[in-house]
Image (cartoon, rainbow, N blue to C red; front, side):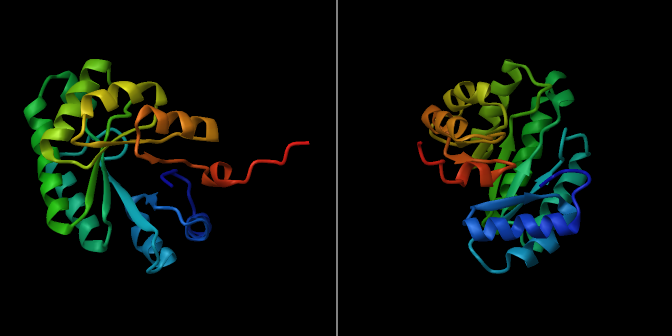
Length: 201
């Protein structure tokens, strides 16, 4: 639920759906965290949010504050967005240090860090570099919203980080992602995935 025009009423309805369907988490904008925590109440649905969304262009200090602020407010799953420009400039230490600080903050708070490797501005080489960073900093998940990248990311994340596949809209896509080795599925339309198949005629 990261759309720029998402309203409070839409957020509420989506959170109700997540509770009714027993989803693992909802991913919301940082400005919606307090409302989402209230809407999901104390149930099993976790509230996740994003740091540096969508292209990681904020200064490291801003990302660090955003990370700690979200953790303080009760978020226990963070999606970190690296900066493609820094990666293409081969400023790898800069980017890895940024991720490491967030990983340490999450570990201290008992939260999960997921590194987004689904940025369309990255080539395969940079995606592999990010996979290695994800493992080295101790992040729990690498995320892609592009099923075509699943094989590459699963192969380079190895056993040290699990893979989550987003952008899944159909049962067939979900089955393919699971068979490819991803551990979690993310969808903007979970009702479609969870609906019972129509009876054969």
